[in-house]
Each structure stands twice: as structure tokens, then as C-alpha cells.
Image (cartoon, rainbow, N blue to C red; front, top):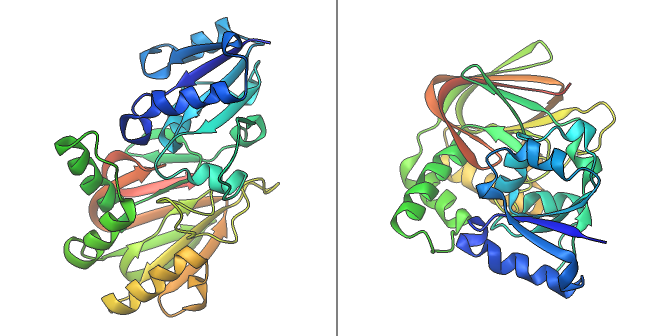
Length: 285
């Protein structure tokens, strides 16, 4: 059996190729063909040419985001396996849990029926979450760090804490879920989630089910004036116990979510910055 290893050399702080080499532990080296995904300008055509072959996708959540937006995953002609090689790996955490030892695992079922995020008139499929708030501002800071030192390992949690304490100013928002309108003052985060977690382990949507038959999404809104109270509640996302603080945290579920901020802010999808906007929509088809 031959396998094509589609790897992202930019993942894991620029050590994606090294991570991909680990796959040789599990397969005969002669059975592996390594292909740099960043050099595949026509990824859909590449997949068509290799229809029926086994694909091992090696990268992080951003690599998965790129893959699902360039390949028709509803009609895959190949088995796709995944070997996580990112810095956050929330998709891995959501699908196989927190395990130290793992080998490539099949993900075809997770690539179907993905939600759509719509921002500034463009549509994107996504695997984890879309949002703006402190998470997207932290992505801006992350990109600044990467620009200064591309090889530096990113401490996303540290960036979030710094952004929270010194940089981010909460914004009022209107959230509409399946036609029901909710208004919130001083919003800190409001991601529409397909995944339970984002940001490398912040379990903001503990009740979300990636394989829910109705394909519903979750949105978790942190809102309030008291920065320390918000920080205390947000800290509990790591143990998925934040929802008990109902005065500052609200969880909603639905198939069509729209969030409108009082002013423009950066938008992130699967940890990738998309641009600035006052509004985004997320919906399950």
C-alpha cells in the first residue's frame, strides 16, 4: 500500500517536515511519498489525480482549514488520515482526546457536513470555530510575534492573557441564533463552535458535539464589565467549568448564528485571521 504524506512545513513553528518524518515509525518508508501541501496550488486537482490513494495529512488546525476549503470533502475518493503537527491541535483533542502516543488516524467522517462561516461576503468551511473578540485580537498579536521570530514557539495562552489584561477593550454585540436576538454589553469572546475547544485547549463549548446529527453549532458569550471576574471565569474554560458563571457566560445552540459587533474587529476562523468586519455568520447546512 502506498501513502501520500501531505505535510505543511510551516506548522509546529516551522518544524512541520520534522514532525512528518515521525510517520516513518508506523509505515514502511518506501510506502511513503512526501508532498509539500504549500506547493500544491491546485489541491483539488492533486486529489483528483490521486483518487483512490491513501492520504496522510500532516499539519495543524490551520492545515485542516486549508484542506477543507480547497477540496470537495463531501465526495472524497481517498481515505484521509491525519497526523497532528500543530501548536494547538484542538481538532485532535476533539476527535481522539489527549493522548501522548498516536499514529495517523482516519478522519473522512469529520470532514463532511462542515459549517460555513461568512465574512465580508466570502464563505469558508471551518473545522473548529469562528469568532471575534479577544481570541481574534490574540491572533493579531500572534502574527506579530511570528513576523519578528518565525522559529519561535508560540505560547497562545500567554498571548491571550497579555491581550486580555492590557490590549483588548470589550465591545457590545448582538447575537442572533435561529432567528432569536440577544443583546450583550461588553463582550470579550463569542465564538461559534463546531469543536469543543480552541486556542490550544480552552474548552469554550463543552456541550458541543462535532458529530451531532442535526449539525448544530454552539456559541459561548463572555460578557461583563468586571475584568477580573471575566478572567476568573475564562480561566475555568480549561476545566470546562465556566458555564456555571451565568452572570458573565452564556451558551447558545443553533444552526444559524449571526454576530454583529458595535464596531469593526478582526475575525478569526480556525485560528487564521480573515480580516476586519462588524459582522459574521455561521451556519450548518
